[in-house]
Amino acid sequence: MTQHEKSQNFLSKIKTNHKKRFSGDSVFRTIILLIACNIFIILGLIIFKITQGAWLSIQTYGIKFLWGTTWQPFPPEPTAPPSFGALPLVWGTLTTSAIALLLGVPISLGIALALSEFTPKSFNYVISFFVELLAAIPSVIYGLWGIFILIPFLQNNVYPHLQATLGFLPFFQGTIRGSSVLTGGIVLAIMIIPTVSAISRDVFAAVPNSQREAIIALGATRWEKARIVMSYGRSGVIGAIMLGLGRAIGETMAITMVIGNSFNMFTSLFEPGSTLASIIANEFTEASSPPVYISALMEVGLILFALAIAVNASARLVIWRSMRKTKEAEML
Amino acid sequence: MSYKIETQNLSAWFGSKQVLQDITMKIKGNVVTAIIGPSGCGKTTLIRCLNRMHELTPRAKVTGKVLLDGEDIYGENVDPVTVRRRIGMVFQKPNPFPMMSIYDNVAAGLKLNGIVDKHRLDKIVEKSLKAAHLWDEVKLELGKSGASLSGGQQQRLCIARALAIEPEVILMDEPTSALDPTAAAKIEQLIRILAEDYTVVIVTHNMQQAARVSDFTAFLYLGKLVEYGSTKDIFENPKSELTEKYITGEFG
Image (cartoon, rainbow over all chains, first blue to last red; front, side, top):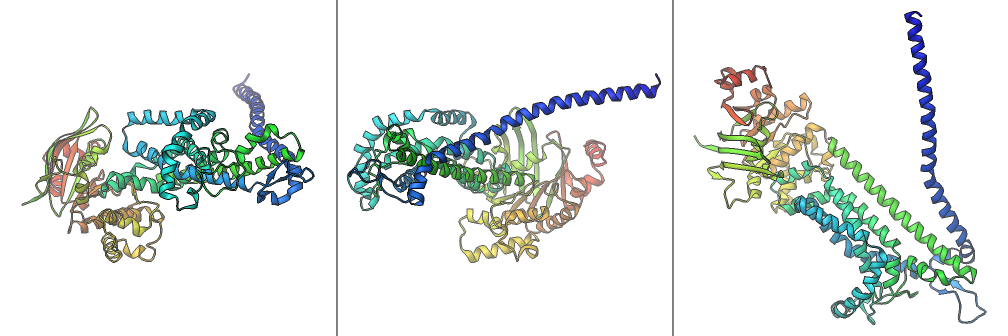
């Protein structure tokens, strides 16, 4: 064999080897791709099945379902048809979520700023550990704690004072109930703290050190430095808050246990109410007949699903854009 | 002859690693003093000790004295925040605040000092941008983001931001190393002009730059001050063999 033939032989061996490896790779790649595509199939099937279940209700009540204010699976006069509308549920979901953000976000931002700007590293591990532990508590435990500890405490020690001082506002009037919209909001506030504080902490930690040095060299105090960090991470924090909102909107078990479960277009926060999620949890087992009852609950689920997806998707978008901005600033 | 800054037996550590050893030097007012030396010799640490920025690094430690107008800035009752308002700093990489406009970048330090009067702010912002030779380029777009400027303009914006709080000393940590030659030349011209009103201390790894802009030069090697004198002397007849070797490019 000449030198040339030898090298030709060698080359063709490499080529066949390469081909073999390549075909193995492509099989692996296809399998992995199919597994990854499952996520679209699962999501698609969920949307399809809920819509299918809700179809009867959608056909019967149309778009009016969204602003209807009655919920009568079994109307008082037996001949009347059942009627359903979701507005008080949407109202309950939005109100409890708003209370959750109002109370939970300042605490979460405080935790995040303390961790990224003020406390020593060794202490950070301890605080982070406990905050993340909050996220690991099952929501039914929050509910139990709400019923047996939080509700009696709030009802006896907090709400009367609240009514005495802020009673001129319509939100704090009427009979004080422990199982109420306000209690639901407070429990949700505690439950969103781990999400909002963990993401905000990461956002603050990603602020380039050069920004901190810039403001310190101008003679800034620690608080003024923290303000620069917050304003730099502003859009990321908005994303964190929206993820917290997503959690608050979808939370079911704990809120069902403390909100009082009354289909009620409330004005006072001391009244009991319901949310989109809580009514499903509360009524699903009894909703065997009439068929439109279960379909109406399915439609409530569809509204909840759409709301949660919209909030989460925009949160991800905002976080992603802020992270990209941070990276660009680092490359300057 | 009075000295603006005087270090006495200044030593600095990162953890257990000593990066500065017994630096004693006197820096004159209204001149440009350059600190040169090979990478890792401690020159950045030295100027970060002059405005108490070094101690912000975790596990960093400083001993010795730094006198500003005869008063020790490491003294017991001295607030580092006040020190930093008298000693401005410009960093290696331009670091404007990207979420603020050009105007707000310059005004950032003033607002920390509680100046909110719009008329007064306008005046100081204009004066500082003019002093940083940036005014003509940005006067029509003061509302634009500080991040929209070119690298050289950003660095001049950072200089304007430092000048706005009217410091007495300006520290510059390799201010041109991230810039192209044209932008660097503009900053060098600016440094010469600034020396008329301010005391400037500049760290540079570029010996030509030190020769061009400075009146005095300090040569640092392995955390020790090897030689310090007028720039002319250091470059033309250095006393130490080590300095000569470094100047002539034998190492570094």
